[in-house]
Image 1 (cartoon, rainbow, N blue to C red):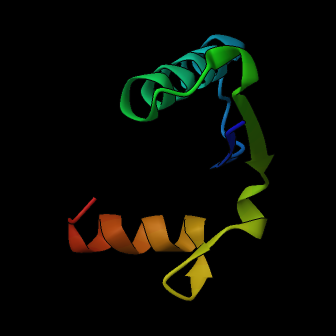
Image 2: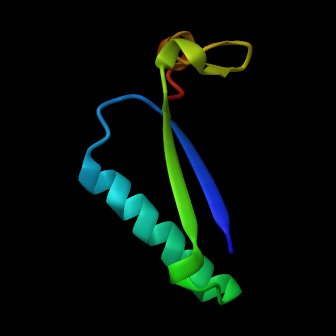
Length: 72
């Protein structure tokens, strides 16, 4: 009974995009590990941008740094 927790930043992700993530994750577990889709649980959590950090800084600041260096 797989349980998958997907955490993403809250940035206008649509219900359709979430449904695609759920379906794709379920399909992958079925194809790779032969898991039953009926007992596969996928949870999507949206995290506020100010609660997400990368490289020791808030994600928004990290993205600005990437843009400034041209590596985005």
